[in-house]
Image 1 (cartoon, rainbow, N blue to C red):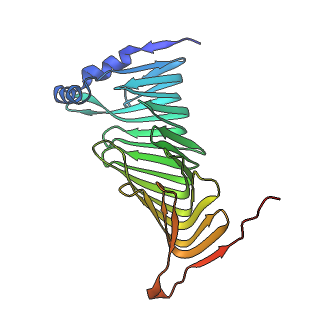
Image 2: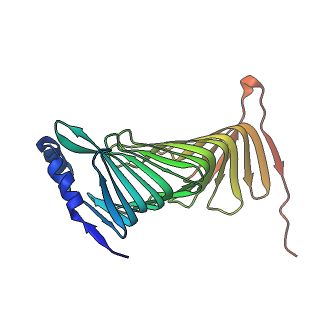
Image 3: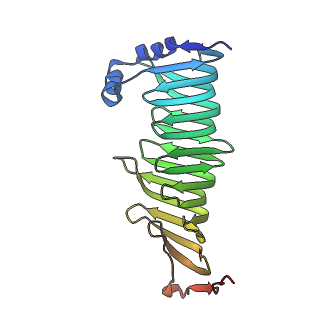
Length: 265
């Protein structure tokens, strides 16, 4: 294979940026370099306004690295200059920035809205704060500090607790991008790092302020030798303690099944 290093590609974008946009980028990130490498080819479709790179493509910009077999970069013309609008990647997509890493089959990145969507039959995201996987889609909205995952979602938190759900939506703080709130819907399961402890519900809402997941809808709490049922419950991810909450107004009672501890002979 021929290894083609197209720094001319990056130069085209650099020189086409407006002075105002360039100054803003330098002030915010101290760099506007966009470099692309590919084993097979990089084509410029001038009429359609996009570039297409093929074969073990590596794109780097401002500390972000995108790897894929095919990458397409669409641009628009504003006031006579080319402005990068959208990046699409497919086949063995890996996106990394710092200690964070996303992986999937397809990816789209809206440059202006700063929205990344990774989709396919299986995709993952990992960072120092945890790990996420899904079988449909993972989306990140950097401007609104939001994320979403759908399709057999699995989340492993930094404290080793595991959350399963059909879908999860999360809000992050604007200051340090740490998790603020998360809502898990459909077939919610929380597995404690302590063996034998598990919570199930239709809905789970997590708040970072108290590290508590508030459960509702067909709540079941399994704790080694006991099973508790109710309409509402609480699981504390910090202490590992779970409780069922009754609802006297609706005459909903808490139910429990306690099994005797079997002693080893």
